[in-house]
Length: 450
Image (cartoon, rainbow, N blue to C red; front, top):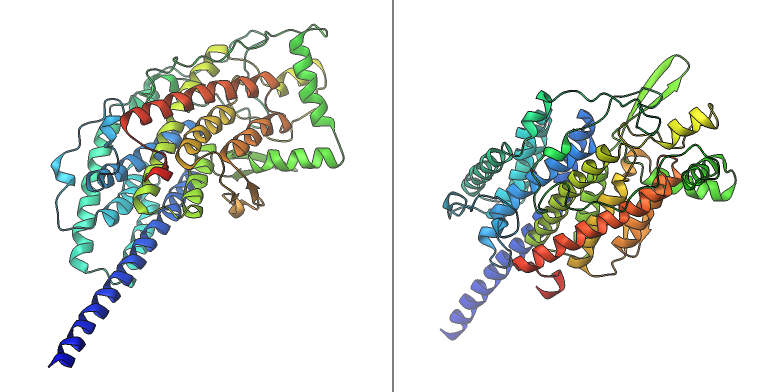
C-alpha cells in the first residue's frame, strides 16, 4: 500500500515537474520572440521608407499596446497612465481572465503594426508564423484564440488613442518652402528631396511637456568669414571628408555603422539606385531587445524596456525636430559646395532636413540614459542590428559608449558640424534625465531591484 502511494506521489511530482519545465520553456520562447517581432515591424518600415520621426511614433504605439496588457497582469509594472501624459486609464476589457497575457501582448505588437503601418498587411505572414510557433509549443487552441482576441482589443484601444496626437493633420498643413537666406537649409544632392516632417513639433508628446521644453545651447552663427568660428566648424568637416588612410577608414566604419538612413540614393551611370536601411529608432529598438536577451530578462521586463525606449525616442524626435526647423541651418555639404569646393561630397548621404541639432545625437543620448537607468552603467553587448544590411557588428561596454559613438559618427560622415553633435548630446541628455526622473517618480525601478 505504501509503495503504491509513493508511486502515486512520484507520478504527480513528475507530471508537475514536466508541466513546470514545459511552461518555463514556453515563457522563454515568448520572451525571445519579442526582439524578432519588433524587427519584423522595422522591416515593414524599411519597405515603406518610413522617415525617422514617424518610425519612432509607430514603435511607441506598438509597444504601448503590449505594455498596457502586461502591466495589468504584472503588478510589478507601473500602469502606463502613471507616466504617459493623457493616456486613458486602462479599462477592464484588457483584464479578462481565460487567456495568456503574454501571447496577447506579443500578438498586439504585430497587430498594431498591421493596422497602423502603410504596408501593415505585410505583417499578416508574421502573425501566422507566430500562431504556428504557439502551436508548436503546444499551447491549447482555445487559449490561443482568447489571447489573440485580447491582443486585438489592446490594439483597438491604443490605435484609437493614437488618432488624437495630431499626426492625421500633418498632410493638411502647408508644404515647406526653403528660405532664401544663405544660412538656411536647402535640399541636397543627389535627389534634392524636400524637407522631411517640417511640422513634427505639433505631434503630441508622450512624457515631456512640449516640443520646446528642451532647447539646446545656441548654435554657432553662420559666417563666410574665414576667421570665424563657423568657418572653423566647416573646415573641420571638410578635412575629415578629405582624409585618407587608416584613420579615415576607422572613422568611415563608425559612420557607416550608425548611418541608419531609411533611404539613400546612389548613382551608377545614368541610373539612380535606392538603398534602404532601418532608422535610428529601429536601431535603438533592436539594441533594447538585444540587451534584454543578454541580461536574461523575462517577457514582462523585456516589454517594459522596449516600451520605455520607444516612448523616449518619440519625444526626443519631437524635441529635436522643433529645434531643426527653428534654427533651420544649412548642411555642411551645401556650404562647402557653395563656398569652398563644388566637387566635395560627404561620406554619408546628407539627410533631407535642417542640420541643427543632430537627430542621432539627441535620440541616441536620450535612449542611452533611459537604458542606463534600467540596466546600470555597464552592460557588455554586441550590436548586430544591421547585419542584414551587410554592416558588421560592433561591441560596446555600455549604452553611453554606444551613444557617444553614434554622436561623433555624424561628423565622421560629413553631415553635421561639431556643435550640432555636441549640443545634440546636451539636448538628448536633458530629455533622458527628465524621462528617467518621471518614470522613477511613477515607480519604475532599475531592473536589478526586481
